[in-house]
Image 1: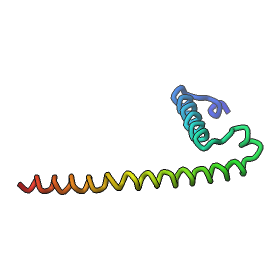
Image 2: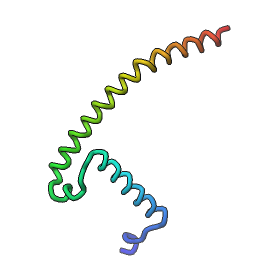
Image 3: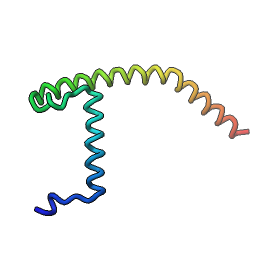
Amino acid sequence: MQRLFTFSPSGLVKLILACIGVGIILAILNIDPRRVWSDFFGTIAEAWAKGWEMADWAVDYLLLGAILVVPVFIILRVLNAIGKKS
């Protein structure tokens, strides 16, 4: 029983950091902690929908960035390969 309730300082720091990390994720997903207790499955469903909305947004920006980054990357690789052959 003592082993169950005994925390090392590093274990306590990890627990606090995990709580902060999960809190940040919940805040990003706009989840109210009080609502989790009263409507767990409804809150999870809303968070799932919000997560998909954020993923859709992220894919849009990924593609937008790739339009510029990928051609520049290819050009630099070709120039680097040509420079090594000389």
